[in-house]
Structure formats: structure tokens, C-alpha cells
Image (tube, rainbow, N blue to C red; front, side, top):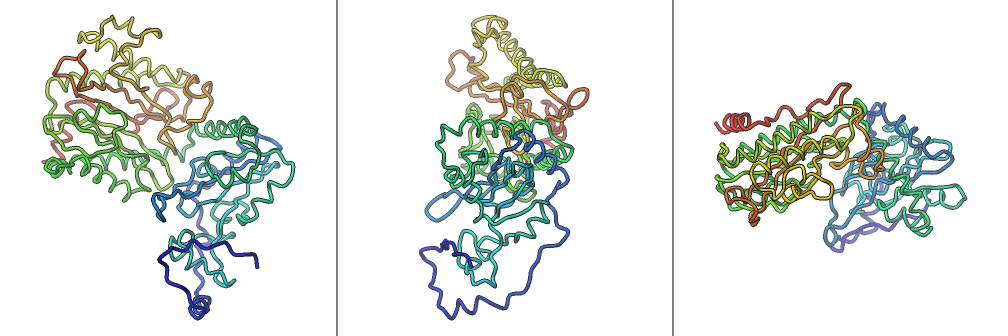
Length: 481
């Protein structure tokens, strides 16, 4: 029998007597997984693995799930596998800690994992190990079960170090699993270029979604729309609470956990001037009925695909004249951006279309110190004082999907059928900005929708949520009636 790993026992655990250890070692019924169990979407994964293998012929590729991270003392953060690992295996659960997908030089894919503890071999892991034991964190598949689930050849994680003893060219998706990075052994500078090429290739593999991925993203969008309705229904209680933003965050996050794995990113619930903070996640403020609420949130499915939707809502149920003017400018910008989406268009076209509308609107308000055309010039950009961020990004397993893709394939590339992205222009009119009239200060507005590129344009996946002023006021009124 191989040496047993050190058990992750807590400092306050009770000692195990020899009698108890002997008693725990036997009389357990078999509990096999269903023989026909498969990872969702299993038919799509072999082609993905074949594509990444073909990009690096004759090389051994390591794609890790990642490791647990300590939150505090002996408590870990909830584990989510790395997106590239999930994209190639379909394995998305918390039991994937430390696992590694290896693609061999001949293209064969092998999953190295920590299998279920064998209760018959004398191991006490299943009841003593707080991090990996079945009694503490739940069941893991054994090697055979993992093979049936994924269609992959499987091997014990303990055998992984042997792969680093020869001269086979290797690439590691670095920065995900410190233990794997250490096994790679060579200086980071020596492997940076090769490992960076692997990271880019894995990101680019996600640029075009297959039909199953689009279905998963639509499911995420649909659950997110339901979560937004939950937030509106929670408004009466939230308005009475001294941290109303937290009440609304809880309403959305409850839906995300009930319908999926949780949220795809930290929920932004920003009321009043908090909406001028692009990534406001403190969510600790009160709500004022005279102000707007910016809600940016997405449900992550159990398969780890996330939506990313933003709506800006009047907390009173009706926009004031100044709020309406600002909202309709952002809506016009978003509509211009959406109209620019089609196969063959530059990825940056929709942002340029949206920003032109924003700059022209700011000029009409008399806010800009120069004409819109001058503000839009590359050597100026003065309009960006009021709208700093880009107008959208790819969407998928990550909220900012395909982030390691090369610029020529993504930011400087062209749109293709099957890409899924967001369009999200905004105005962030800071409360202390003296270039603005007082009525506009402290207003933050973003409208964000998720779209899939089709053969002749784009389909609005988040159409279930209203976008217009009248549509939002009517929708809120119905939910609060």
C-alpha cells in the first residue's frame, strides 16, 4: 500500500482511538454512481480537446483545476474549478480540487485526480480529513467512475510528478495551481512564453460558442432575469432598511444559489452616487426613493456559464426628468452599439458607435468643453471623463471571457457567428464634478445586455428584461402592485 497523505485534521478534532479506527474500517455498503451518468454536454468536449492538442503537436499540456484558497485560519473559500479545465472536461464541482487534465503528445487526454477514498485499504481519509474526506466535504468519484463521467482515461494524482521526469516538451497553464507550477520546475522566465501561448490558445478556444454553450448562457440569462424581478419585489423592505443595498444583494444572490452555482461575479447593487463607482461591491448603503439603483448581476449555472446584465432602475418606480434624459442618452448609445453587431464587423465597432452617441449627447448638454468630433479624436477623448470603461466584452465561463486571447483574435479581431458578448455603455456623473449642472451630479447609469452573434446580426438574449423608460416603469409597477 502506498504511503498515506497527511490528513487535514483540525486543531479541535477529538483523538481517534484504535478501537474506533478499527470500527470505522468496515461494514460500509457500496454506493456506486449511476452507470449512465455523464457530464452535461459531454458530446462537445472531445472536439475541444482535439483542437487544443492540434495547436501544440508533440507536446504535453497541463491544464489544472486549481487549489483551495484559505479565507481565514482553517476555512477555505468555496472552490470553483478553473474555466479552461471546466471547458475541456465538463467537470465543474467542488470536488475537483487539485485535479489536472493532461493532454499527451499523441493527443490523448488523461485526467489526473484524487479518487474517492477506498475504505477497504485502511485509509482514514474519508472520515478524518477535513479538506478532502467524504464525511466532511462530500463524495468524489473513483477512477472508473470519473472515466465514465468524462470519457477520459484517468490516473491517480499521485502519479502526476512522474510526467516531469523525462524530456517531453511541456506547457503548463501557469498561475492556477502553485503545486503544479512547482512541479514544472524550470524558472518562470524560461516557461513564460510557452505557457502564455497555451493560455492564449485556451482563451481563443472559447471565442465561438457551440450550440450547447449558447443554451447554457441562455439559461443563465433567464435565471438572471428572474433574479432582477426578485430584486424589484424586495424593494419595499430594502427601502426601509439602513443597508438596503445589502437586502437587494441578498435577494438576487438567493436566486443565483437556488437556480445555479451562485453568482458569476460579485453582485453590484449601487444606489445614488454609488452607481458612479464602476465596480461598487460593498453594497452597504441605504436607499433613497428619489435616486436611481444600478444593478449589475449574473447567475452562474451549475455548468459555470454566467450572464452579465445591468439595469438602472428608479427607486420610486418613476424616473425624474433629469434621470430620464440621462437614461435615454445611454439607451440610445446602447441601441447604436447593438445595431453595429454582425459577422465581419470589427469587435471595436459597437463601442465606437455607442461612444459617438454619448459624446454627441454630452456636447448637446453643453457639458463638453469642445465639440463632439474633437472629443472623439484619439488624441483627445475628453468625453471619457463621464464614461471611463469599454462598452462590452466576451461572455461565457468567465464574465470577462477569453481574457488571455491575443489582441488580433479578440479586441482587434472581427465578430463571428456564435460569439456571445455584452453591450454596456454607461454614464457616470460624479457627485463632485463641477463641470456638470447640479441636477446631473451623482447619477450613474449603465444598461447592459447579453447578445449572441447570428448569421445576419445579433440576438438579444436578455430581451425578457425591459430597456426603455416606459417599459421599466411599467414592469416595476406590475411587480410591486
